[in-house]
Length: 186
Image 1 (cartoon, one colour):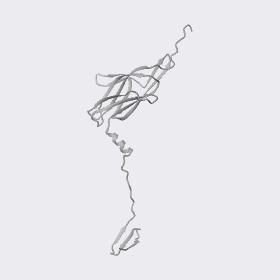
Image 2 (cartoon, one colour):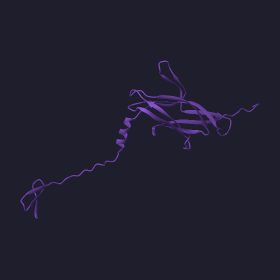
Image 3 (cartoon, one colour):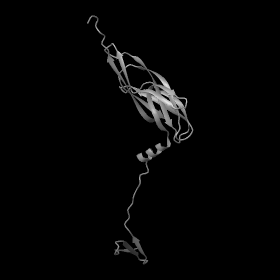
């Protein structure tokens, strides 16, 4: 079959076959969309999770008669004093307080607190289950005493995970200062 081609005044290509039918062909723009997961899609998925309310270190936590929590002496630094050139191993005692708001998250979940030394070494982790229930603006709160053996000074990072997803990082600095003992008779 033979066809004749010509352009009309619009720029469209007209093709006329021997059967006398005229077919119009217009230039086209083809747009392809990527179907992979984008960063924006991943961020939108995070809408459907719990919200961190508080994560801190402190000296003690008081639960008042009306149910309100009071955090006493929040800390992010321990100053260790000693009489040796290098810091000797010591046990630091403090309270960790963590509070979430449930959002739409419900049911038993898993929380992990994983400290890292200043040199990047993973230290023993703490993991425990927690129950999310109630209204969107309510959620679980927990406090627990930690007796933490420390062998070096520097900045320790405590990574807080909810269901294996990093929620926040809590810094805790340990400094060491040698105390000079006074010389007798001086």
